[in-house]
Image (tube, rainbow, N blue to C red):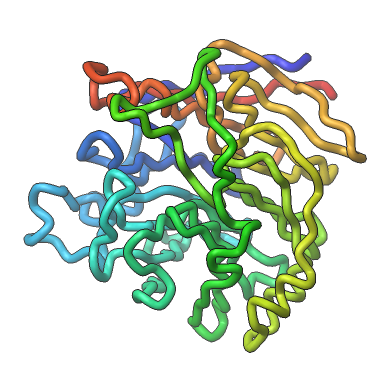
Length: 342
């Protein structure tokens, strides 16, 4: 079994991580239980965090939202992804505490890693990101033309973005494949994870991964066990109806409750088995446990380095004051690297 190597520890709650083709590491901190001072940062070799791309983009504060424009500042960043074409993409659902979407806030932002400058901001209007939407994670087609996003809000969906045209659309909106499964209860530390009012962890389409050939998109609800996939060709037909796309959707069976997905260079699907503080791997229909470690509290997001190393964040969602009243709103979290000879 593999081991975990601690890369960094944070005083705030991390979700996303991504590694560029030249080994630079970027992380993000959503505004869930605290109004964090830094939303997106580059992890420097000395362990310090550099607000990215600069301090101004990180200037938003919930308490001062009337003073800062949401379309060109980080509001509540959920995911960061390097496309290995020299760009960092930042996905901002702009819904602090996963609640109300801030008007003009939802966006996908492209940053040139050579200049550390924003190249493009793709804002999502209410036809793509209405109230109740929480943009969760994103993957990019091999050609770089399309982006695929999961929406883990109460009414789940996928978002397809044509980066060439600058257009986006919701698909499989309300379809069973993108919804939470009502009979699934998320467990952590051996017991149901619930808020004081009895509500559990309820997140729709969340986990997302693209096969290395770019031909298949995989996804799953966090509060769910059924794994789905669809050929990306079906998503790229811009005038295709949901009924037409549905005909291409495949259910692949039931697996663990998961958050992050990742296809590695050998086309093995990594799954964050959050109920077990573990990472598992699916290949050829067989699931194996890669690593299990008590420190891996809520394994969240994967990334792969240029040397093939797999990175994983531990976001400690079960330790949030949402679920444990009295816990600090500043949730300590970690970034690990999986040391695996398999």
